[in-house]
Length: 366
Ligand SMILES: Nc1ncnc2c1ncn2[C@@H]1O[C@H](COP(=O)(O)OP(=O)(O)OP(=O)(O)O)[C@@H](O)[C@H]1O
Image (cartoon, rainbow, N blue to C red):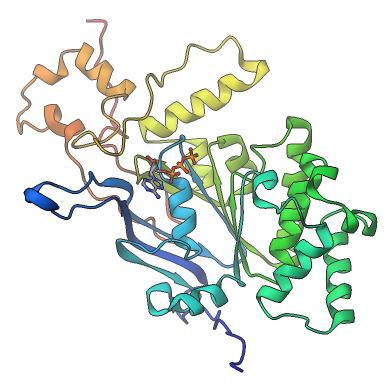
């Protein structure tokens, strides 16, 4: 019998980054030519040229609206999806170097927790069976007593009691089910948790409890987190760094204090304005600045993909800037030009892809 897979989770000597995502793209559908020379299917560019690094023990958040590609990126990080191009490295292991068995072994160290535990837990399995199955899949604690001891320890860590072990998912509250999903992830002693909308399916009153539990577990077990969310308030609360995703790309990324405190990209600024409006204390704020819905990834606008909804682009157009031919002819074209987003240096300032980030808008009063 083969020895269980061991992931050399030793980061390279130069850095303490345990997750490195380099220029990763993931396209769905096919650009192959089918019968009669027709394109077989349109290509969905779900993730496009995304790069980020997550230092050990920190929390990196990926934020964006529905359809921006967050879940696809989460699945790429845990190896459930293979990139169309680019590379994901966990510790010192490039996922492209692993076969399917290798990826399964790696997933012991990198666990995915999904948004809706009702969907992710098997309704026919008790909590005990669910946790025991996770250990069986990864060939851990084969001895019956050791297995039970591990399960008892973990169920306590997530704030449940032994009495919960004999229950089925439908006999638990939403918050308790999410605690079980978290227990199933940590029972295998992972080093990295990828949390895909970990609280968005829960009542507001329960959300804070789960967020506190996650913070407690992160400190206690020295875990590294990647949190996928559409909620900037959650980002500000949990994350050390953040990537803001729009139509498959990061439009801004950096330290969470920089990005949330002084967002530079108009999309991030719009998300922040919406987050502030959600607060009942801020009802008097001006109406939302983000209009319309996210375009289809089958028809991504050219240039800056956000320009069709961008309040800055609208303000510039209203001020007639589109018609202005500046000395170098650049101003009029900025919104429809794409430029690569540089990765922020460790501890560096936020980077944003908008050319107007630091530019004041033209004075419309004159
Ligand atoms: N297997 C697939 N085949 C084809 N298209 C897909 C597939 N998975 C995702 N997509 C498309 O990729 C785009 C990004 O989807 P994804 O689920 O990653 O976004 P998201 O930001 O997580 O959205 P949500 O919050 O609604 O889950 C969407 O347009 C989606 O329809």
